[in-house]
Amino acid sequence: MGGLANIAIDGPAGAGKSTVAKLVAERLSYIYIDTGAMYRAVTLQALMDKIDMNDAINLTRTAETVDLALRVDGGGNTCVFLNGMDVTSQIRSPQVSNNVSLVSRIPGVRRKMTQLQKEMGAGGGVVMEGRDIGTQVLPDAEMKFFLTASVEERARRRCAELMQRGFTETYAEVYEDIARRDDIDSKRTVAPLKPAVDAEVIDCTGMTVEQVVGVIVARVSGRSG
Ligand code: DC
Image 1 (cartoon, rainbow, N blue to C red):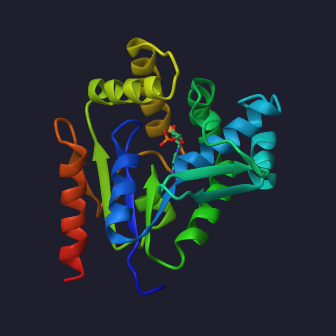
Image 2 (image 1 turned 60 degrees about the horizontal axis):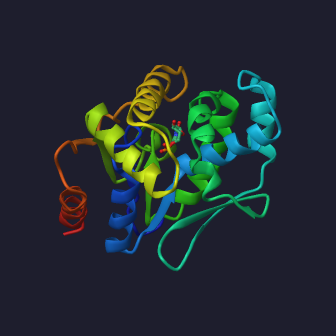
């Protein structure tokens, strides 16, 4: 273990985890790692290869053979590279969003991603964001948070975010996608979405990003004295 703490931030889709985790990392000069982007990249590869979303063997093979790299650009944004190609924008497409829960429920896919993520956190000093960071990937993380918010609020946020990126999904479609993903993510047998027993649960409904970041940074600063 390195000298710096690890911070795990988990929670359902659209709770604002990415925005919050990125800002927390920036404030503390930690490295931000978006694990959802890794599952999205594997999903994109599987879609490009026309793999059936129930074909666990080939989905596992995809996860094991894909060349995946996360790089932070000058603006602090994570860029995702798949076999050397920048797929940062493509992994946010509705097609990937609609299939990623099916890919991420496959045990072999999770095994490979978890192994990569553990390696990324081995030196400490990371803010890692996902669904199972506090429970499976970094169970020894010094600080664990679970961010949640109502489905309505999460759908509103996702809608605004998608619109900004130029996608034209309706509120109803986004709401349905989020509710469906919550269902699959929390019911899967391997690493279901749930707060770690030692995580602090923050209900972000009605809170600003700044307020949530403030709570987390205060806790981390308080810990290190
Ligand atoms: O955070 P996101 O919406 O980009 O995540 C995409 C999907 O990946 C989400 O439906 C659940 C899955 N995921 C996961 O199972 N485990 C993680 N650590 C991160 C994401």
